[in-house]
Length: 168
Image (cartoon, rainbow, N blue to C red):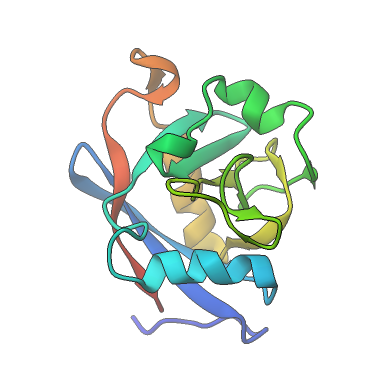
C-alpha cells in the first residue's frame, strides 16, 4: 500500500515498535514545521545513536508513552508526565520532548537527553508533532495497552523498543 502523506506537506517519519523483540506496530509521526521538531527528525533519520534500537522506557495508561534515552527516563513517571510539568496538556497522539530531554535553550539537551513523550491524553509539553492517521492512532492505543508494573512503576513488563526509524 502506498504511503499517504499529510495534506499539510509536513515531514512524515516513523518508529517501528517492537515488543519482546517481535514487531508490534509502525507509528507514523507528522512533524510540525518548528525549530524544536528538527532534532527529532534528525534522530529518526541519522545513523546510530539515533532512535533506532532505543527503548520505550515508560508507558503510563491514560497519560503517555516515554521513549528515547534511558539517561533521560523519568524516575517517577506519573509526576513527570502528568504533573505540573511545562506546556499544555497534549491531546492523544501528540508528540513532545520529555522534560529533561530534547530541546534546551533552543538546542538539543546534553548527552543522553533525547527523551520524548507521545501523549495518551494526559502528558504535558510543547507539541512538535502528532501520530499520523487512524492506523497510527490505533497502533498507539495498542502500545498503550501493553502490560506494565512488574519491573517498576510504568515500566513495560516486556522489552519495548524502536526496531527501526526513518522518513516516509
